[in-house]
Length: 310
Image 1 (cartoon, rainbow, N blue to C red):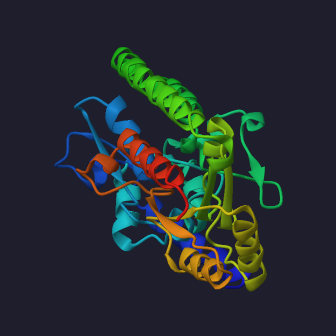
Image 2 (cartoon, rainbow, N blue to C red; image 1 turned 180 degrees about the vertical axis):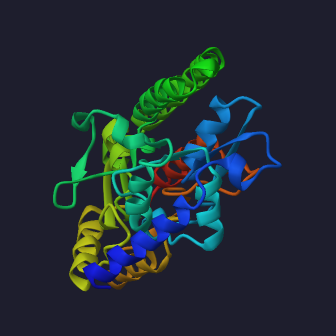
């Protein structure tokens, strides 16, 4: 798409969104404020922070890759009706990022990852900021504390309830962070190696002492080539790494190619299981919550990486 045509498309989307900016105008039957989250992780946090007067909706469901996400007409309606939009930022939302950024001129919009000091974030892929902040539980906790402060500025009458619920959530996340740290540090250093389809786990590796590698970069928008595949296969064979992992929101073909490449070189690399990276599990499942997703990922890694090589 040419630059001029891209700008026309963005302008049209914004025009459609500006036709209606408040939930009461577009949805008069609803007495609840609508807070819209782009990802499940943010939606889960908002649901724990909000009171019964707030209706939290999520744009991207289970298995959706935010890097490649394209908004539907129904999504545009949700964006119009929302009183508040909370998104990750730092280009996690890919093709939707420009629209989300410009919506800030017409309604409250918060880019969660962009609340954090830039010095605490990871840079990769040509100095781009790694947006996957939720994989450092302590950093995620800090971002939600800053989100709560922003919400209180927007909704001062909700301060008492927001502050109370944020403290409860923060305590749960402190406990989760300790569990991750203690469990992974008990694994020998030579086994703390995490290989996935794309480089989503940089914060996890930094926080919990794991070496992480991805066939693709921090965004799934960039595909991998034969050179990338061969280099990763050579590394896995040389270091006799026992297992690699697929991601729920990324096609399995990349990791399957890695496994076949290793087996072709006499290395019995196995599939360690499925991890949740850019999307959580189905609503109503344990993995459909942030804490449940992290526990699933932690247990999947430990089970695969602690099993002796056949």
